[in-house]
Length: 630
Image (cartoon, rainbow, N blue to C red; front, side, top):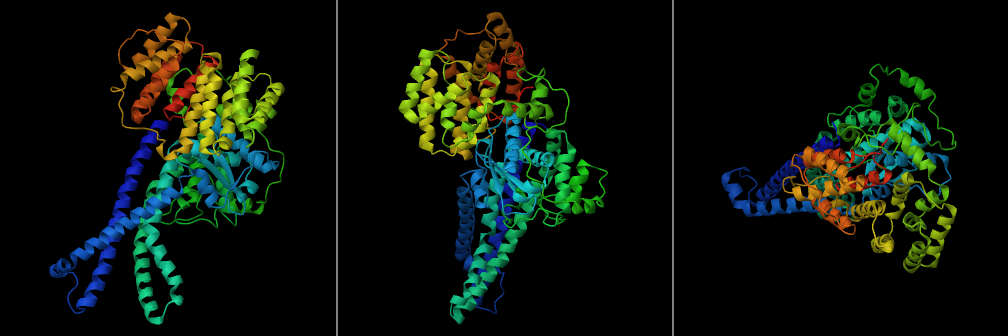
């Protein structure tokens, strides 16, 4: 199952989620109506039959109001809970007691965690998520939360950090990245809201019971009766909540385990983490685990409940290691002690030859297969890229104080006169101290290898997105001025601005970021032609080669042969923006076809790093993660 099939599956699960929610609400309404009818009959005529046509007719107006109020209350409660999570994955992690991993941490275990997450993100071609640690949680667990990759957060427990080896931690991270890449996170956020809505009556009932002692004895009796009725009704919601969680969660956990094995090609990593959970006294239990968030976690212990959110641990282990003997858990338990705080290693992938990065894979199917599933070569290449970034730039990109200046550094022109004008722009926008910091970075690293530019942007994004929205808007204005300082827009400048603006927009309004719409390629044929034509021209300076590349892309789409049109150098970026805005609304299956055409287009030349960057920006604008080319 590739990325596009996973996205389609997530969309179908969302429809199932809505259907089950409606059934749950209907069931709760019926129970509430029954309680209301009993109350009304007891007040009017306790000896009369309850469910008669006359009885229902007499009380129908009241029951209609009760039904409407119950449905409205549940819907508003769900909406309220979802709105409280609009801060994205970070809001979820902080709500559970997560502590953000600092940019300048010297703790080797936190550095190891950061390295693992950054490597995975760079390899998968998505923004680096925020990283949190639930320090006081001794259980071994983790989760990913957010609406989209641009506002994602990955959190691990203190128990996982202290107990798991690097390969095991990498396996857990790969499992969580599978949820990030496959559209599971948005479903999780919606599920939290839905669960809150259908459990809210029981929560109110419990609250009423907790305050009953503050009432008079007569009012306390009525209060207890109402509270018990609400709690009984809430158990209907609890049943449906668990049914909903089980229906959308169990199978995707097995898929995420399989994806983690494909990512790392090291089954022992994630299997080792699952074994340690099974062997540990603390297991995967969290003090903060509730009905709301259980479906998000990496593991849910040894539960065999019919409506459990996760398959049993032994089943998950045997899916990875079919010959696993549960008797091994005793030996694992005996040697289960916190790992020493050693220096953080950067690369821990299996050894072996690796392809050089910078090229394009030979077949579209290979690229599509790797979307959302970076392999060992890509993870190793990402680790090497992250390690190769000069330390002054890496520290600045991770620093809350200097991340903006690190991004400005990337746009500094090699021509001294143009660079001076750009530094004046920085001074006007960020102040003298900002201009001085950019100059300091230029002095420390006069030039940066092209393949390190996008990774530097990616490791700085988690810090950048925490800036206020007004400041981010000013940054985008400054970037536009820096780009146009020389009177033109080159490929890298466009790619950086497009990637950054896309990530910022998705982080500011994560609920609006979506993987697919309802548009069809037949309706966006002109925009698809423009996209392929611009990509062909940028990848092939010679017109004949550009025409051949353009024709190859059109052939994949099956929309006929077209001639390259004249395109002014100042016009191509605006035209590309207009095309991408329309094509981002394509259906998921049409986005897959378009990606095949893009790959066919760029294959006609030895693709340089700048063309890879442009393809990355184009694909990101379509809300598809572009894996690192190796």
